[in-house]
Length: 535
Image (cartoon, rainbow, N blue to C red; front, side):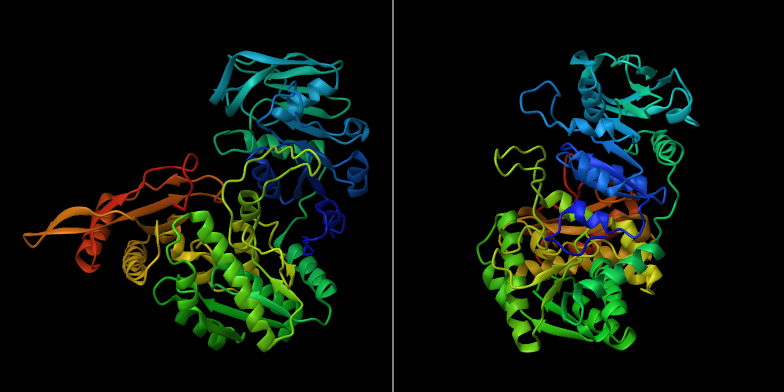
């Protein structure tokens, strides 16, 4: 995994201990990293690179295979992203997915046109050739379609593998050259035979071995941290969540007392969490933590700020400023460690922007405080050894390092904390209201045994008030939104179908025990179209 953020993905990948790797060339699909995750589930390492990666760079990486992602463009559009045509001469297995398949067809002499009728959502796949790519994939399996273009003519040497009622060319292959294309998205959970197809490509076609394991990651990462850091000191932004806690254990294993953990209490944590964090790390883990009380400072910084992007950037900027100030007292420090993960990078980055033309093929969704909020005059070098991991992989690493389950299974919590779960301006009163409501949510889902069934469960405070009646008196108070979701990796999520009696208990407790609240509602929006957090 890469630690040097100034190093290109191509360079970092070339340093991998394990050369059993599949490269995904990203053409702007929101699912590119999901493809990488599915490959890793087969215990084979994968990494997403820009579609501009040259054939020579790929040759130096020596991957076992290449996957071309989907994307929002049409291959025949002016300025549509194209890969280096020399990749077809690398003699490597290549799988094109959706746009990737259409690009393969176009560059190798076939034809792609606007479809008479687009195909979106679930479709039954009819398999014409059950070998190679479709081994053990059941005929009639549901696959997820999302395309407005279709292949009209195949390149020389290609043949049809599968079709749907609406799409004649749903999968194609040039068996001799090991070139494959699918019009659907096998990486999404809706594609019931998708993972079997991916395994066929990884194991049978690319001849990979399952060597991407937690133990291999820890061993290689510890070695990279030591080589990168040397005898320098590292400052870690500790939050108490699974990401930063796993990072603390990993860094402590690699460099011991060269690591200084600093917990900045910005005032946006949940009730009792700062105290619990300090007790765990100092008394149970024997890892020293420098506590900094900066509640008043952060609250003053956000006074009157209502825009969520501005909140995130201000919090991120203030975090770094506090780190810089405290480092002068405790330092010197050369490195700042962050628990940045793949989803943070995905949702924060304007990916694939050509510095000369400004062409963009992926859309920025929102910035994260530990990615988008970094100031240009940052005084530290960054160490981010988890930035290529998904949340489930971080949990596995945490367990292997001895992290207790109460941290390993902790629900994701945003870096800006409750500041982005209070819509509108932030005040002490609103923070206390939300802390009390959030505590009730956590208490009740734990009591009912639902905590580990959910990806996240939390409360949101809205910047409006509504009329209510309590004790024959008219009230005019805030509503609380309950947001409970299920997910595998945070990339997509569905609202949780929890029992009504649980919602009733939580709602009754909140309106009776939390001053300033007279209404509780439940969010039944999935991601997409919504996001998990409200801001």
